[in-house]
Length: 254
Ligand SMILES: [Zn+2]
Ligand SMILES: [Zn+2]
Image 1: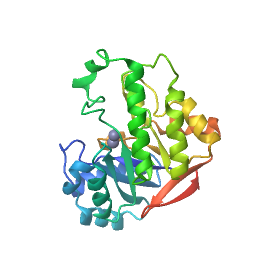
Image 2: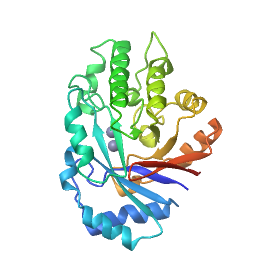
Image 3: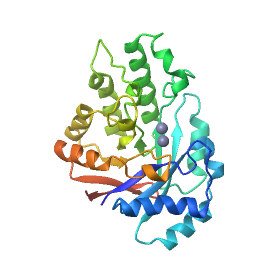
C-alpha cells in the first residue's frame, strides 16, 4: 500500500482548511491509487489546522486512511518548545526537518546566493551536524528530506555526500526512526529524490525503515513522482514501507 505522508494543505499559509480544498487532496490521492495520506503542516502554521474538519473528511472517505502529522523545524535551542508541540495533539507522526543553518534559510530561493559565499564542505558539515542533533532529540518519528542541502545542485568536494550523511544514519538507526523518500527534489534544480540513491542503499543495508512522500504544497502534487520513487526503492531492495498511527510505526508491503 502506498501513502503520501508529507502534505501541506496550507502551503506556506496561502490556503486554508476548507471542506472543498481538503477534498481535492483526497480526490488526488484516490486518482493516484494511494491507500493513505497524511497532512503535515509546518509547525509554525499548526494553529490554522482544523482538526474537526479532518475528522469529518476522514469519516466521509473510509477508502483512504487519513493521518494527521506535523513537520517540525529543528533549530538548536527549540527543544523545550518542540517537546510541548508534540504534546499538543495526538499526532500520528512528527517529521523532523532542518531548514535553517544558523538562521540561514538555505532552501529558500531568496537566500540561495549565500551558497557561493561559503565553503561548500563546511555547509554540508554544518547541515548534517544539525540533522544529527535533531535525530538525537528523539522527538521525531521521521527524518524529513534527509539531504535537502543539495537542493540547488551544490556538491561537497572533500568528502562524498554519503560520508557526510553516514553518522546521521547511525543516529537514525539508534533512534529507531524512519526516513522519508521525498520526491520534491525532482521538482527542484537538483532534480533528484531526497535522499540520494547511495544514501537509500546505505539505509537498506542498515535496515532503516522508509516511507514515500511528495511534500505536496498543492493537491496536484499529491503522490507526484511516486512511480520513480517506488522503482528506485525496489531496485535497492525495499519491499515494505513504514506507516504511522498515533506515533506507532508499522510496515506494509509496497
Ligand atoms: Zn521541509
Ligand atoms: Zn514539507
